[in-house]
Length: 478
Image (cartoon, rainbow, N blue to C red; front, side, top):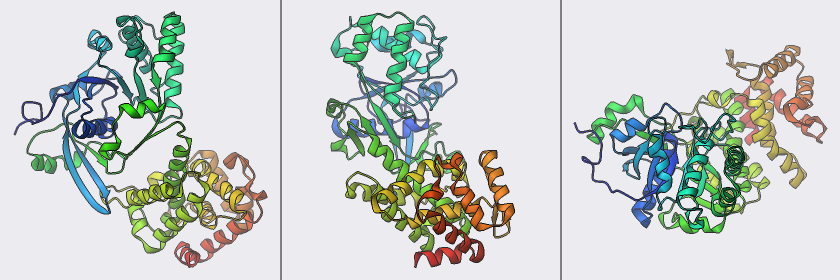
């Protein structure tokens, strides 16, 4: 059986217009797929040079396959469960700067280079005071990038039209702003001069971005069947869900250079990404956190099964559309579309997402993902969001650590576990709720001071303890 490479596959080659720091599953299933789609459908002509950002990685394996790999997209698409695959051919070659630093720096001299993409983990955009310009390579990603940018600045004598568009995909807030800040710090440390600093500030565009696609990665347990289906050997098969969203915050000129709209890609260009970040945290992450204690105590173990259950599914949908969406500022149609997409993602039959895997540090997650919706709902409606408060009551019940006689493997900070153990030892529901709501270490505020909230949560928790989650939730949604 043949191995996948450019001799055995009918693929195209493209001009090297993108340098990408990271060769892992996420970028290959997300950004590289988008570049592939735009190459195929819009003549984008964006070939990628993938750079290995740490000393261990997949560049050799990627080069063995001439940059090719097979992507499977599995999930709900247009209302139907679909699994489809294609060979992605936008990566032209890979470079390991720990072995070929000269080749790495030479990329800076390519006049066609236009974009910098990265996904070097949340810790990747960080400053290392030990990095030096003459290191080969620098330890940090921003250090390597600064050396590359300085080489480009020198090669083209600071030409304004040789600046780059930088779109980091690391999961940190203001990723582009932070990357630029560190590069300017290195420029100062390394005495690279005012002209270089001006070129960075005036001729390079640093975009903040928000990425969203679940990428399970390499399907090791299914590779025998996949290889048989494909008819060739591919050591870099990657799986992702059908849903994708890339929010890019930057000047309008960036949109003009990325032809996503004609390809039907869900790329949003904006000058303010905060509403989109808030939407994701409140609806997607918030729905997960809202669901966990309710669904698990109801006797369900998986996210998908929760949506398929008539009672739990109805509860979650009502809470999202009636209590979370009304707290957000984007157009109602956009919010409803995103919420429906989230529910389709939860229903994905190709992903088995365990509720307990989401339950890690549920108190802090509730504070950041759900509590803002509760407070905003009260502010806007002058009434209590009962579905979200039912989840809060369920969360307190969850931390009792018992599901119908089965011990729950609680996973949180020890201080949180100790707090709930102490409270539940009293057996006094009224006092448990009062102590929990007034715990400012949990919430950053005293929730017991909100009119009616303590009484409502106490009523729900008492019902769950007395009647069980199934009867309580069934009564709640009637």
